[in-house]
Length: 439
Ligand SMILES: *Cc1c(COP(=O)(O)O)cnc(C)c1O
Picture: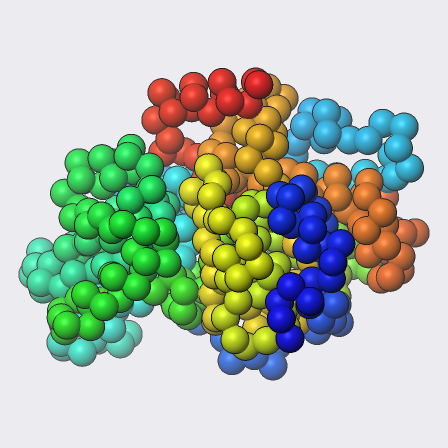
């Protein structure tokens, strides 16, 4: 079917006018827990566990946590109050809102640390096992020894990125001893390129958008057996690294005394670019919580690639350009025109819906969060902040509640807004973000 027909005239028009909207997925099955699918997050868990000692040794920022990668789950009562709908139907049934602080994940300062650490560790283990430098059951701390690092340094870890994945792979790869090369689109932010170059990481710039940078990086790696390309559009290792975050969130909800069950649904709002990070996290959560967790993606109004792919309900790739959108947004982590072909088919079963956000709202909400809670994040990371509002205060959100018998229990719900990046943003950029948010 033509993707435009699949969207229906009303949704299509709103999308083309770049008006924010909530779209509910018609292929979503809330009882589906994805456990029949062949990707097992427990393997990623085990890898993170056995490599914790190594990471504590290589990355000073991870030392205090014993090499375990995690981010805080913070209650945000003042932001909740400011974004709540006093007087609207739904007021008084707001539940409890939390911010998952992947914006301060160590080393990479974004959600990309999860996928990036996992894929880089996979590669380091595989190469050293194959070379006979590591035994399968040996202590992974051996990978920090100079002779092993020298061996890894003969290999290049390469990636195509609009910024944050490049930062993550570059910084993590270099930490493990790899040579790192980052292919970036010309529209990637200058400070991200500078930061990488200052760490001795090779930056290759390409005309065109994110997809073009990925394609160039992939092609360059094909010609070189010592280059491993981290493929943001297809990598299972990245996906599983993200999926491992689900257990961490569950432990934190338990510690915060927020049960998740039929009487206490969990809603999670995740900013989506190509779909790997939010898709992996949603997948991990569905496997653990089944029908009690409801995942929504947040996409820029100019780049709703997962929305158009899922709405078209086809394996054929459908890009935002195909429906007449331009993929022009300041939300650089989310400026992706084509969804991951690995993740989109999984999300057609597991994802409840997508809401879109215009750029002005991203800057405004990021500023509101800073004023209310003293938390400073990058604009892309603010995309999820409108999530509870859509679910609790819009006609489509209420329709979703009714359809899944959630209305009676909505007051007992927990809403987790995934904040995805910001810690590495330089102060002068933050000042620019604030100025735009104050307009
Ligand atoms: C990469 C990124 C995302 C989305 O991740 P995808 O895997 O591209 O969907 C969200 N927010 C920020 C800040 C990011 O860097």
